[in-house]
Length: 384
Image (cartoon, rainbow, N blue to C red):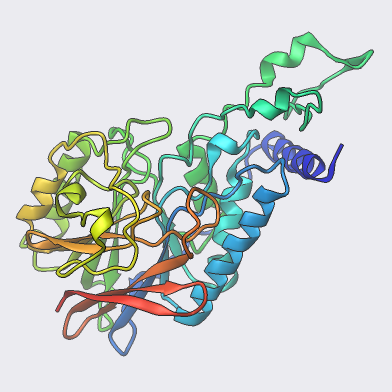
C-alpha cells in the first residue's frame, strides 16, 4: 500500500473508531454573547469554499489542506478578527469515502479554535454531497483498498465476507451530524441547528452582536440561511423566507437595528447586478476578480423581496463562485461575494478572505479583501 493510500486507511480507521465508540457528553457551550469592543469595533473574517478532504488518496489532496491551513493562519494573524464565519463548502464530501467526515470539518475549524476566536458555520452544496467513486479505484492498482468502518470483516483466501458488504456504503456524514459534532465538541462554536420544520433546515439561525454598553442590547443581527445543495435542492425555500420574516419582525420589529445575511449559494438577484466577466469590475461595484458568471440558487422563492423591503438589511454575503469577489449595490442593500479561501475546489486564483468590519457609534459597515500574502484591496463602505 502506497503512502497516500496508507494515509487514507488511517483516516478511515480513526473515523471507524470514532463512529463505533458511541456518543460522548458534550462540553459546556460558549456562554458569552458576541459583543462590540470597548472602542466600538467588531470584525469578522469570512472563510469561503475551503473544500477540505479532496483526493485524500493522492499526494495532491492533503497538500491542499495544508495550504488552506496556511491561508487561514495568515489572515487571522494579520486581521485578528473577533469572529469567523465559515461560509459553506467547508469540506468536499463527494471526495470523502469515510463515514465520519467530521474529522475534516474539525480540522477546518482548528485555525480559529487554536487562537481562541469564536466562529459559526453555514452549509454549502459540497458539505454533504454524495460520494463519487473515482474511476482510478477500479484500475489494476486498485488503490485505495476498500475499508468498511465498524464492520467485523473476515478474510478467507483474500476475499471479503459477503455478509458485511452491506455495511460498505460510504454514505458520508449528514448536515445534522456535522453541525451536532461541531456544537457538542467546541465551546467556541456559535453555530445553531435550525428549526426541524424547515427544508433546507440545518444552518438557519440568527446571532446577536450586542452593544459595548450593554450585553443585552442588540447592535447588529447576523442571519444565516441554508441555501441547500448536496442532499437538498439548491434553494432558499418559501418556508425559510417566512421563517426569516417571523424572526426579524419578532426581534427587530421596527427594523431599527442593522441586519446582515450570510449564505453559501447566491440568489438569482446576484445575476441582475453582476459585472460582465469580460469587462472587469467598474463602479458602483467594487472588487478585484470577475472570472466567471454567477451560479445562483435554482429558484427564487421570495427571500429577496423580503430583504429589499427591510431597510435594516445592509448586505448579503455568499461564496460558491470561486472566481468572483465583488460587491455590487442592489436596490437598498449590497450583494457581496467572499474570496475563495481554500486551496481545494476549482480555480487557481490567489487565495484570501473577505473581511467585514463594523463600528457601533456611529454605525459603519465596511469590507475589504485580505490576501494570503498580506496585501489588502477592494475596500468598500456598505453602510455609514
